Length: 66
Image (cartoon, rainbow, N blue to C red):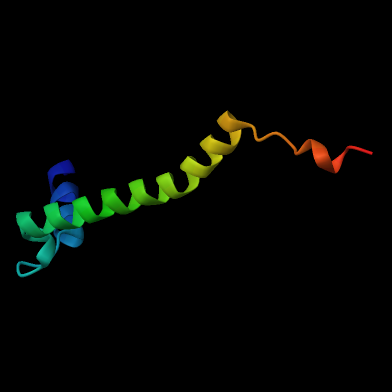
């Protein structure tokens, strides 16, 4: 009985025969674009935050001088 449930599951969720997800080159290209996009978004957020925390910009003294 478990074999039939497994077969039904894979039959229901497997892509059609002519689907692009069955093509290895397409999957590699799609995966590389996805990973690159995640890396770019992380860099876009993390780089300015890291610079702000590590550099700790000092306030100009001329603002507070009397």
